[in-house]
Length: 446
Figure 1 (spheres, rainbow, N blue to C red):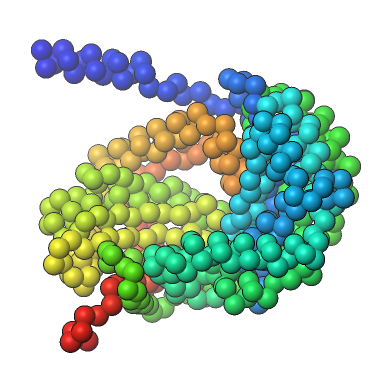
Figure 2: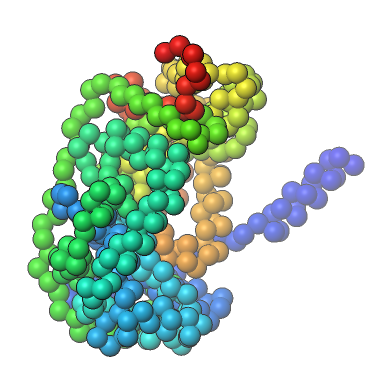
């Protein structure tokens, strides 16, 4: 009976598993240099329309941190054609949703709306690409909104403040160490001229990528793109110059105490190659390693620290590699009961040493590959997720063939590749270890 039940469950799982259907993707480039990608999804008469600009917080001038994100807010104020404060209201009145986000490498704007409104949102996005109207009275009010956003996400969060300090320690010179939202002292001095300078330098068709996912054909999208975006003149883009990151020669440590900390934790990070800067399949190897270490309670790191030794409430690892310049590999854990952070760090050190000595197993790697491919399949079920995946990858410098061949590259990773990647990245002299702690008790030593 048990064998029969297992067989039936396996058959049911096979029937209900998502079909591995590759998305139909095509691309073209307008004469003004704007690239466009169309991801066909004909399951519902809706579209996701996105415009990605190749500019983020890492491109901000010195002393102006936060200006890329601040400009993103100001882009919703209006143009000569669109009345002040009406951009999002027009989208909502037509049954759609819109928003935007800023990262270290890009700024993106998007709308999700019925397919027969695609021309409308294209015309609006094309209009504000070069014709945004930033009024002086908007400057202080929106700057206050950004400061309040920083208050809620960072300044009022011990974890947020710790993460900010940790990133500043991880990067010795590169702008990735600066918070995307900016340092508060510099946000408070941003003005209209700062916003317009960033806008005029970077917001242009030849610095943008159009992504349209949904119930459309490439010919439809191309005709609309030529009508709305194709008439915009390109600009002379500034040479992209970013600070280099020198070799990391000494392990760094930081400790932060905050009375609001309810759960202490440890963080250990290393700079790593990104999907853009890696050689061979190192990025894929690091991604699989993070899953082997932290893909669930039975994975290596949580099993060791939470199940086997009972030292941690939780433990994990992650790899962040979708970046133009460099990525990050990190471990984190929270102590359980009377376990101290140094004791937890000692166990983490032992686990890393064992990994670098013995590597991973074929079984662990095979399971991680299955997990990654399953996640990719499920992501294809979301139109907006697909649009974001392609937009982010292309904006940081990857190409369509690299996106489309990702699964084959992943499948080719060997246990030797994973071990080589771990040994190249997890070097003690390149590490940053941080403790987030409660305040010292009165009379405590140290």
